[in-house]
Length: 211
Ligand code: G3P
Image (cartoon, rainbow, N blue to C red):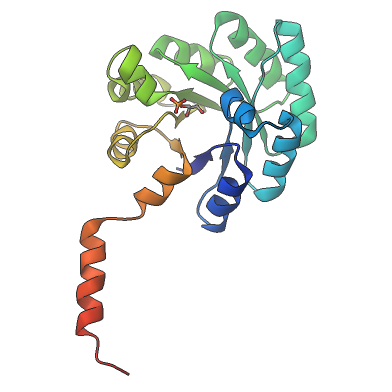
């Protein structure tokens, strides 16, 4: 069960990696666009900042172009680069081609247990449901993840839950069976804090006998 940073911001990635418990970095085309830099430059920097997996999405227009793009990405770091592929039937076939050839793949933006079932058949290492977006646009995102987790039981495919907006949502999706989560830096930092803990620290500090 791993936690990832969901960002392409280099300083955020540096800060997250300094924590020592963040396994890697997930990006998406919007994150990359916000950096204003060439995507492959950002990707190389992120790969240098972490010794864990870095996720990068294929965006080319045609399947054959996405196939070539996936190999280009994979060749940058075959052991740690995970190719993100948006969930469509055409792209699930692309996923099967790539996984059979040894490319690590995540099927992203999955919205249904049926897509997740097919992603597992295609050999995807991960599937990424966008939990908060699902809740806003489809139905209860946490319940959808619970069904996905049931479908994936006994398979090699793992749920990496994304689009998480609160500590409570992270906890709910983990309880629903997500194997991993990816969160932005502010949420990552918020997860480690609680008013009760702060209060206890204040009380202990007040009780401390001066050295
Ligand atoms: O990276 C995919 C996902 O986490 C983005 O979510 O809804 O914050 O754009 P959202």
